[in-house]
Length: 241
Ligand code: PXP
Image (tube, rainbow, N blue to C red; front, side, top):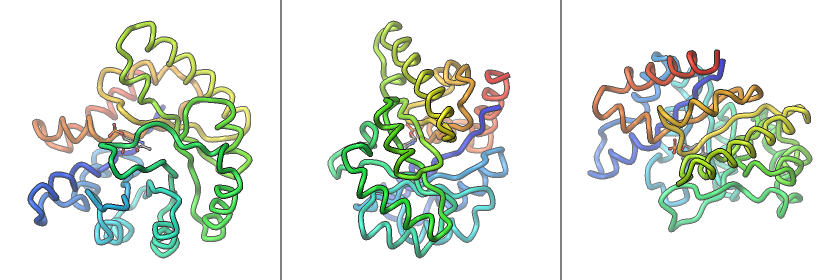
């Protein structure tokens, strides 16, 4: 069965809308775990627009499943990761002006740099995932750099305007998953997944885990976080049978 990691960034986005202390992403993480999430994901951005250093510190103390820190491979955040020791880091591209992560990381272009960074993480017993496009050159680069996990970018699939576009991208995701698994990589996916489009992703045999934020936090505003997480866990159970 495909497992669910919940990204709690947008609980922090809501808090930052008023600059106060509520709602607390640390409390959200606990509720998500109690509701069936097997991991908690947060992205410590350079501009700290949602999750901040205090959140990360407390999440590290309180998350009992698996803490996945999404980050750019910059010296500042690398130092924070080594200090905090999440279970896993996911390297993502980061642009200040973007609303959310746009597209996968170009690991192939910066292979030397990422190989060094992966080694640094492994020296500290932190597992490494790369958020990449479903393309062979990027999968090869992630594997060569030493990562044990890849997270395939599902944004193009999720934002497809036509059925053909969506079917074509699903095929790319399917082929990429098969290829990555043949190299011994754990395959996960995320970005733009929701209660509807997740169904097709569940038909990919090599897919082990997905990471969802916005759709779950949006539903939580109406039905509560516990129900929103449980609804998704249940769908994954049904669809990946
Ligand atoms: N995976 C990665 C690498 C991301 O950057 C994001 C967005 O923060 C997600 C998954 C979750 O995307 P969404 O919020 O669209 O579910």
